[in-house]
Amino acid sequence: MRALVVGAGIGGLAAAGALAQNGWETTVLEQAPAPRTTGYMIDFFGPGFAAAESLGAIAHLQRHGEMYSRARYVDQTGRTRAKFAMESFLNAAHGKFFSILRPDIETGLREWVGDSVGIVQGARVVSVDPGRCPGTDGPGVPARAVVADGRDFEADLLIGADGIHSTVRGAMPAIPGTRVLRHLGLHVFGYVFYDPELAANLGREVVLSDSLVRQATLYALSDGRVTFFGVVECHDPDPAPDTREELFTKFRGLGSDVDRALDQRPAEIFEDVVAQAVVPAWSAGRCVLLGDAAFAVSLLAGQGASLAIAGAKVLADALGSGNDIPAALAGYEASWRPLVEQQQEAGRRNARFFVPSGRRALLLRRWSLHLMNLAPVNAVIARRVFGASVVGKGHPGP
Image (cartoon, rainbow, N blue to C red; front, top):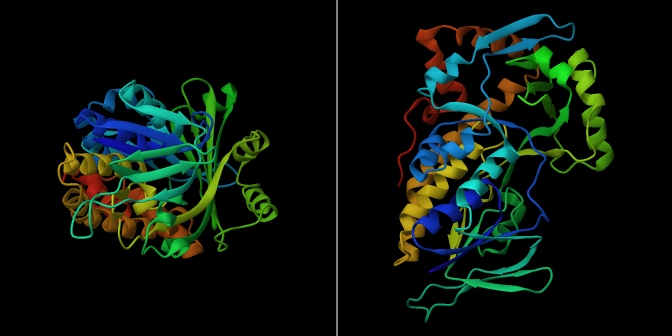
C-alpha cells in the first residue's frame, strides 16, 4: 500500500514513520526547500510521549530536549511576582516531560524515520483529489496531489498534515474553508538567537513577564542560545505586515532581558495567529487530515505536538496494513476526536491564563501559580489549566 503525506511537520513525519513500520510505502511532500529552523519552545508530555515511546522515537526527541528547574514570572523591574518548580509538571506527567524546540522535534523525527520514508522538499501542493474507495459508487480511484512544478503523485491514502492553514483541507468536499478556524484573539512570535551571557544569566529558569495583554517568555538553551516566545492580544485574524510590526513592539518595556532579546530578532522568525481548527469531518474518500490541519488546539494549549504524534499513531494503528481504509479512517476519528475536543476546551481556558486582560485575572494567575508549588493541589491545577490528558498516563492508542 502507498501513502502520500502532505507536510513534513511533526504530525506528517510521525504518521509517515508509523505507517512505514506497518509496511506502507510512504512519501512525504514538503513545500519548504529545507527543514525548518524557526520556531519556539514546546513542553512535551502527555499522550504524545506515550506514543513516541511505543513507536521507538522517544530517544531521538529526548536527545534534543532541555530540562528546567523552575518558571519565574517577573515584572518590568525584574521583581519576582510568582514562581513554581518544574517538578510540579514532572509529577503531574509522571516524570514523562521535557522541553524542546519545535524544529528540534522535527529533527528528531527525521532521525527516527531515517530511510524508511521518502521526503521531497520544495514540493508545494497546488491541487488535491481525495480519490474514492471502492464501493457502491464504483471502483476505487487513487488519491492524487499535484505540486507547483507539475509533478503528479498518486497513492492509496493521502494524509493532509500541512498545518492550520492546510491546503489539503481546503480541497476536501463539505469543509467550509476558513470558517473551520476559531480565532482566539492572540498573535504569537518566536525565534532563537545566540547570546551566551544572557543564557548564563537565565540558567535553568524559564523567565516569563508578569504583564497584561501580552507576555514574553525566555528560555536558555544548553549551547548558549536563547529562545524568545511572545504572545500578544490581537483581534484581527489576518493582520497586515505593518500591524504585525506594531504588535511586536508591544513587548518593549517588559524588562531589560526582554528588550535585549527584542534587539536580537533575526531576519526570519516564526509568527502566526492563535487559532483552533474545528473541522466537521476529518476524512473524505482516500484523504484524511491529521495534526493542526484537523484539530489544532492552539499554540497555548500545551499539547499540539503531543496530540500530533499521538494522533499519528492512532491513525496508523487503525489503518494497519490498509485492508479497509474507510473503516480505519472512521475509527480513527471516532476514537480520537473526544480527546481533541477536551484539549481544545482547555486551550480556550489557557489563552487568558497566559495573557490576562485585566488586573483581577493577573492576580488570579499569580494565586494559581503559587498553588502549583503545593503537592496536594498541583495535579488539580494542571488538570484545570492543561486538560485531564496531561496528568493521566496518556492515550494508549485507538
